[in-house]
Image (cartoon, rainbow, N blue to C red; front, side, top):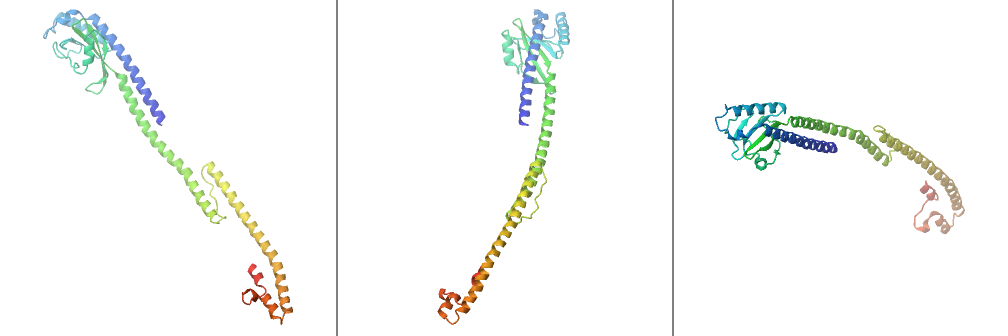
Length: 295
């Protein structure tokens, strides 16, 4: 998910940069074209000259270029005073201050020395993206060309959609991870509990064999282990029973011959004491003491 987010961010920035440069070149070219159709006499217009023939003719040329180049607005203003001479929308009168002069100071300074340049992207009061380009016209006029960067609005919408998709994907990823973890951890916890019971000697404990294939294989292996331990325990019990039987037979003979020996030594207290165990300080004991101790 992080790799996808990083890739999406990189693509978004690359597209914005490429589109910004493309729009800047188009606006600069439009501004240069506008400078070829505007007469030098326009710089002589004064406030109130909107009805002069030169003003109307220039207004018609600007409107035609505006429609042909699919521009948003063209404004011609004086380079030194930053006062408007021609406005394609005709909302600014001759002599009004150029409204973006305070925002594009660096661009206007470079345009005033003869360089055509585009401004950075900016948002209008309605929230849409715009971009401007400035081209000098002689020494006393600057032509400003504005266009709406509609594709940036589309990129913003795409970004919002991607953010929503990313959030949904993250929620789904967490849910799937939680479900997958439970699918594995719960069977493993059951196997762990069964292993503890087997370790306490409950070899008949049933081993759960549910869950993923790997857990099922582990459960089957543990079940075989428990069966092997149970079988070995039974074999050991049988072996111990056989050992006890083999030991019991000679001890029975020893008890019998000990009894006979005591009968033969009856009357000889010193030798009888060895048979009874008195010489060892054990007190009087029966001749079957060793036999019963083994049993």
